Image (cartoon, rainbow, N blue to C red; front, side, top):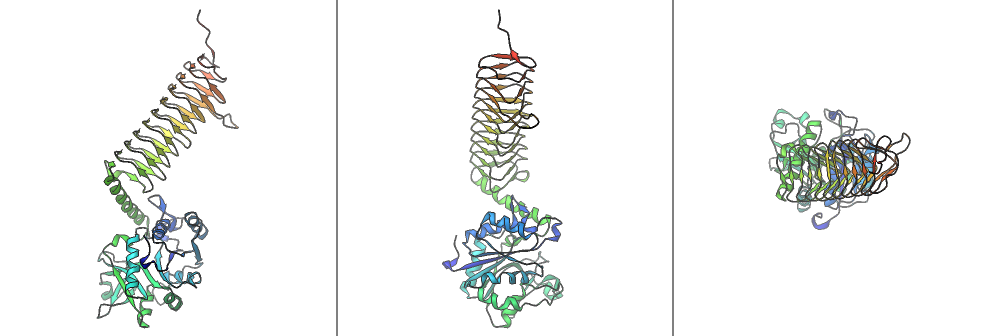
Amino acid sequence: MSTPENSPLAAVILAAGKGTRMKSRLAKVLHPVLGRPLLIRLLETLRTLHVQPQVVVVGYQGEEVQEVCRQFDPHITFAQQTEQRGSGHAAQMALPVLEDFSGRVLILSGDMPLLDAQLLSQLVETSQRGDEDLTLLSANSPQHRDFGRIVRDAQGRVERIQEAKDCSPQEYALTEVNLGAYCAKAQFLRQFLPRLEANNAQGEFYITDLVALARQNGLRVGALVTDKIECALGVNSRLDLATVSATLKERYLERLMLQGVSILDPTSTWIEDSVQIGPDCVIWPGTVLCGQTTIASGCQIGPNTQITDSQVGPDCQIAHSVLLQAQVEEGVKIGPFAYLRPGAKIGPQAKVGDFVEIKNSTIGRGAKVPHLSYIGDSSVGAGTNIGCGTITCNYDGRAKHRTIIGEKVFIGSNSSLVAPVQIGDGATTGAGAVVTRDVPPHSVVVGVPARPLPPKN
């Protein structure tokens, strides 16, 4: 999606506040909503509109906010608001960056992640079509009593915005409210932002006062009245954060279901919109899917399963388990109560059973780790069976070492494999063996420490 008529469009994103009602040490715009920071959600929307330049006004935890923005887009520019004196003052800080810009400028708050590209594009189109110096986004919403009121003149033209805390009883009764998104000509901002005054109950410079300034000077002011009131929901508290997250989650789950994914209980399922899921998957209640996770077609996921930054192949079954940065190939069965940690790679048709933990290890095709085992820093060959209670002892107190287990090996219950050690193809360890030396292929070792079983007479 591009800007209307491909005319120059810049954006100023106000992201300097601490967000005291969040009651957090973290800057408000860095709080995650469905897996990504509030501010990044808005920047993703602006990317689809090809907005350039994008000026983020930072203040509280400014270095941290800048770092998050640079990771998303190194071309974003910044302005510093060292003292938080209101939205108008914050916008003033961006003026030097826009000194040579001649198009229109979107002014947005960094805590409005539900603003979508279509609505912002309509706002810009409205501004251009009416050749308006300033255009605001509004809605008729009697329930939003803490929003600023749109005051219109006898001809129905926008005259001013009155903040709720400064309203008279007659103004407070108005139902058209300001949603906090603006589109203005750059030259208008350069002329009138410096003329704002702090004549209000908070002693702050309100960006909303630009409306009255424009009208007093005979300039064009317009409003796009939208019925998409939820798009302008800002985040000022943890309650708001939960509400916005739930809205985004519901939208994404609906999209997934329309694409052929069965989500049996959407209310108890958390799936971030960075997650990709193929058709004919069934997502059971209590499932949490996060980050850069991909689930191929035909999988059964859950119940009560958490998967983060992992790749799952087709036709897998994963129940009551946790996967973090793991790779699972086709037809694997996992769980219940398995834990796959970073670096776990599970081959096709393998099985990882109950109370099994796997870290930085490869499990070969058709291999089985059925019960109560820890496999760390290891390679397990195809067709191998790991008995209940087996441990790869990968840490000697100073360094970690690898265990190599060949193909079609049988590891007896309660075996301890003390790395570095290698078990040859077709070998067997007896129950309770403590293996401290390499085991030749097709041999049998037993005991503590494990020794070759004497040949039968």
